[in-house]
Image (tube, rainbow, N blue to C red; front, side, top):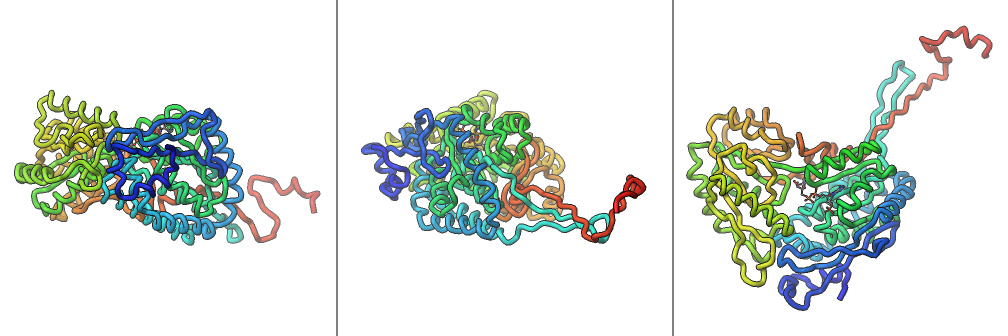
Length: 522
Ligand code: NAP
């Protein structure tokens, strides 16, 4: 029986996991184009499987190029009206959407658990994050300012206005499927852009839920659109579209590079939030308990599927054995399985599970030592087809190995001992990615040395992540360009228009033009 997504979440409430093996309801969703909820123009649907048990969860639309054109046309047509109403007025829709999300948060939490495999605490935390972001962006409505700059004489001024780009395409990943969609829609709408969202095919239902809340909040028809479908099928068409002025995308570096190539045909502005490979450094003088708590968070939060996940562990040699022993002991206590009662849920899909198994196997084949984990956990019949993997700690010691160089994006971490601060810095900086990094030390000397020389967009000192709405989430190197959050993130969604004005009313003198030419003019 086909049910709309929100009815489904309501029906299931907190008990849906128990309903899964039998009497399962199948969700079905549509796309939002020009204010209408529509099917794909070719009437083709795609299947979404639950990461919790590998069973079918629902169907979503396989949008076509024609659907993309319709959505972008709708966004372009509504741009003029929307950009003229002013940020204060626009912020009211964001406040309203925030209220609606808050008062229906239980539905969203259940959806995040069901569609993404999040454990309950982390689903709640993501919803808190969405609410916080919407509040932050809406509050910014009174802070969008421009500049008035002195011109070349006292009667000349240059007015620098911040104006929206036009049609913004928001391409989002699956790992924070509510947070990423909200974080792109809110600043784009606040600043007067209109939006087409293209969510991950692994989490289309969460995106639909968020978009519906903006529609219920009264966002006018055409201002916000949602197109689903495989990025490989419609992504290039969206990115190359002549009417798209800004593409904000969060995802893998390879997809980001592809988008960058395609966007050049139209010179669309890009915000690209791509892969990470965070080093987690524990110095010999660190507060070990705080470092351990933060490491457990940074590695196993969201089953290791976060762009700020600790992927490489460097521990000072004086404390290495003791720290690793404790790390293994604490990790053993993590419960993996049922998202309602566990600390860690599954990976997002079968490919992610197989990739993790492959990486760990090749590390073992090349002599690395698995200290804990390294396989699928035994969870009984109910979850045997879910995409679960044990939290895994590997003593690797080879900086050139894939475990230290490639983004693994799963609950697997490689560790090695370090001693010299300069050498540790160069190991930490030896990465093609440059998003998050972590340092635990009580020494101001070490803290400032690393803050000065670490080549990452974020360094968390003596604390866990993630980024705050008022921080600028940005990465160096292949992590991309631009960023989200804070005034700098909001300013990514506006461009500067310069108006030059002369207001003396006197006759102009132009140095390179001879006044004699104008002698017949009064
Ligand atoms: P992905 O496979 O690159 O997909 C991201 C989005 O791009 C999806 O919506 C995908 O659609 C779409 N896409 C695929 N091919 C496309 C194309 N040719 N043109 C346009 N769009 C296309 O990444 P993911 O697996 O969803 O997300 C995980 C990655 O995101 C990790 O690398 C992680 O580090 C990164 N991430 C970064 C940040 C950050 O702030 N830096 C935050 C979160 C995640 P389909 O799903 O339909 O293929």
